[in-house]
Structures are given as structure tokens and as C-alpha cells.
Length: 447
Image (cartoon, rainbow, N blue to C red; front, side, top):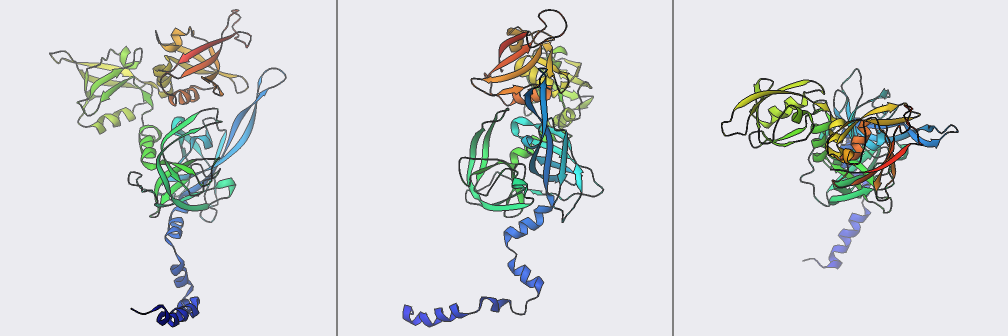
């Protein structure tokens, strides 16, 4: 084996070599290819599908001189990524909210300088995910979806987004941890996230909704939050969870109607739960019944049942052939009409449905339907009551209630047993105009 002294001339010769000597005579294209790292390849492939999002959203600014609510529009910015060539974009719910007056989307100007007007198609506030749609005269670039089921701690990842309105910013890092839980404080709607990806790739305000990518350029997560009390700790929603929410709630093919019953898809479509007072209960469906056909078509697989539920719109009739749980196994047909999903969530969790009432200056929700012995009924709520605001007990922030959808999103994010303190306006003097002088407070326990 050569001694260190014998190796010294060789080491000195190597050190004296000109690093640029290997590139002498290369063309510009060859030099670029030599510099093209795996990270640069990912950015080159995925960046055209990443968008910058701005939403103009109303924020409550207190009361004016006449005691009416005063509202201001505030611009919120974030990121998103195109999932479908027809223009469907996934982002975070907190970037666009449910009440945005205007949503605009921009690609990298070198790819497409057009300013697109986006439509909020669907959202799940409790998952902090929303689906936007833009229209164009071309097919849009999309990101390839990977899986989050085989992520490795220490694996190289990249985040692409628009932090602090700095468009198309790339940061690199590793997977720092998996299966993290996080509660976001300081938001009028609480967010508790489970099973998040933790990364040290920089995720700053404005990155929300952008993609987290593996070194193959595959989407493995949607960046959603940062830990403001620590350095280099960011979080992303695993792509497998994103896919589940897309399939069940966000895509246009997801079910928009609430039917008030659930089945065991792996056990012969046996009805496992019927919500009292809901559409299925009104149609006299019972636990233990088996669904054998929908609208005349026999059910042969779980996909058959999911597809037929997904195609159903609220109010549209669904004809079910039911095999009873009695020993004879007799069959019958029933017709049920689904409700709006927000109505179903509120009825299932609080025992009531609501409708929007008033205008932007003075907006509430009005109680419409009450379930006997439900949480709302037990607290003495009445049809026609106006719900002004709710607060999560103990010590939670006030949440102004203006639509059934926003109320349902809040309620769906809460654990069973959570107590909501509600400010209710009731027409106590019979003049037909509930006012703040007729305030009724109640406590609703979420089922």
C-alpha cells in the first residue's frame, strides 16, 4: 500500500488541475446538461403546473355607527397545483375560503401570462383542501401524482410555491418526520390536522396549497402549514389523503347529496346506520336491510354503489330495491330524495338544518328543521331562530355564521362531545324582527 508521502505528488497534481478543463470544447447545450441536477429536472417538469392564487375575501371589521356589521375586502395569496388538464386546481381551503368575492390564478408568466378567473367548485374546510376550476383554450400542464405510503424519513423533497408573493420559489429539504399532528391556533375556524408530513424544506406564508414533490417529480403532499415558533419545520397533507378527499368530496363526481344512511360495502351492502329524521328514515329504510339494486341496476361491487351515489343531486329521487332483514328475506322498493350535504352534516351532528338569512351587512342562518331529541331540540331552539355566532367551549374564538356550508364545515371538523356556545336571536316581542336585544344563548353538544 502506498505511503502518504508517496501519494502526495498525485494529490498535488489533482489539486492543480483546472476544474473548467473538463468543459473545454462543450457546447452550451452540453454544459447545461452537465449542470442539470435531479432537483433542477423536477423544477423544469413541475413548475409549469404550479399556480399563484389571490382571493379577495370579506373580513368582519366590527360594527358601524348604526350597529350594522362592517365588512372589508382583504387579499389572501397562496399557491396551487393543476391536477387535471381541463383546469382543475387543488389548493388549501384557508387560501380561498368559502366566501371569496374574486379568485384569480396565474401561471409562471414565461409559461402562460394569462390572468385566469377561477371558480371555487368544492371544499372541505376540516381537511383544509379546496378545488378550483379555470377555463382556457388549451390543455393545462399537470403534476404527476405519487404516493405518500412509502415515504422515508431523510428522503429528499422539494416545495414549489409563491411565498411572500415571490412567484415560483423553490426550496429543497428532506422528510423530517411522518404522522405528525398539528393544531392551528389563532384562526376563527379551528384546524386540527393528523398524519401530516414534516419537512425542513422552507414553507413560508404563500406556499400554502403548493406541491411537495419527491426527487422523481411526483406529488407526495400539499403544503399546508408552518410552525412559526421554529425554524425549518413545515408540514404537508399526504397525497394519499388528498386523493381520498378528492374522490369522496371534491371532484365533480363526488356525492353532493346526503342520504342519511350508511352501508357495509364489503358485507353485501347491509345498512349499518340510519339517521333518525333523515331522508332514509323518512323512506322507512332500516338497519339490517340490504341494498340489492339502485335505480333498477343490481349492485355487483362497491364501485357500483359509490358511482350511483356520486351521480345523485340533492332532491333527485333514488329508487332502491331492499331485501329486508326478516327471516323470509322479502324485497321491496323505496324512493328517497337526498338533502344538501351541508344540511345532512348539521342534522347528523347537531339535529338541525339552517338556511342563509339577511344580507352581507347583516347575515345569519335561520333554523329550518329540528330533529326530535337532537342537540338543538334539547337546547330549546325553535324554527325561525337566527344563529348569529358560535364559540367553541372553553375559550375558543367566535365564529360568525353566515351560510349553512360554513356552519357545516366548522361542525364537521369537531370531535363528538365538543360544546358549542351559540348566540341566537329570537323574535321574543313578536314584531317579526329579531334583534340583538332579543339574544338567547345556548350550548350545543356535537354528536
